[in-house]
Image (tube, rainbow, N blue to C red; front, side, top):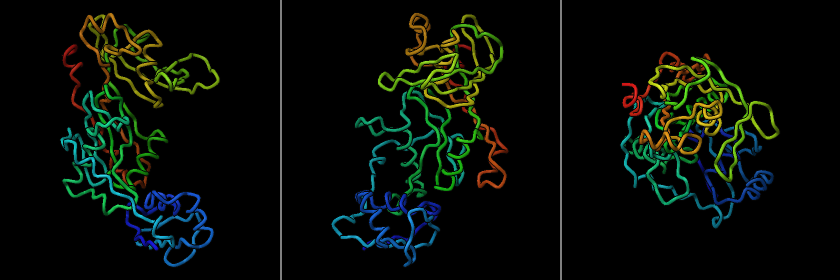
Length: 316
């Protein structure tokens, strides 16, 4: 028998989601059978798969000891540096300025120095995250950037904030603004572009179409030219949708690829300027959280990253 006391970060979850995280070695088929047989109880009473947990609830799981071993808490994040360039932090949210060359998450390699591991180590040192006291939660990124894109990334420090931030992203209530340098002029000084997007998973390459095609998803990208030093243009980009490589592929599609982009850009111009990583920065976040949200207070501020190196170099 295993017994768990539900904490604040577990609260609000369906019971099956909680059990899956609390006992990752328990096969799902067995978990569903235990629920059907009333061998998983909440506060001593039978429960349904869809029942949601509240803080203070006691979840009891009647299962043989050999299959009920609790998960081993992954402490590998302690191997990485806890240094972060923090732009904003409070008890719910951490917004950091990710440098070029740092992965947001592990890409499967033995390397452990990722942004999320740095965040876990930082919060562990502050005693705001203790894996051994959590059944199902760990700090998580609500957005991610490519390894060679710098700028703002938002992380949630508790489960309630994570739910609200993820819902805000799905609903379009977090507005992401980027700065980039293009190597060709754009069609207008300012515009909102629409197109259709497909990712080739095997090649990690995106295709853009001006007309609908089966398998392509709609995208929407706004831009405004901030400055120009021909043939380079400093451009502010607003993402209305968030597809893979959307800004890089969409701007290249209209004939204005980003400086330094080896996948969608101009190899010759990248060599000419000595820039081999895309000149693209997640520069600003504007929150429009719904009324009554725990994070409604974020609506009073606009968060900006420091001007990226490429902006200082070419447009100082």
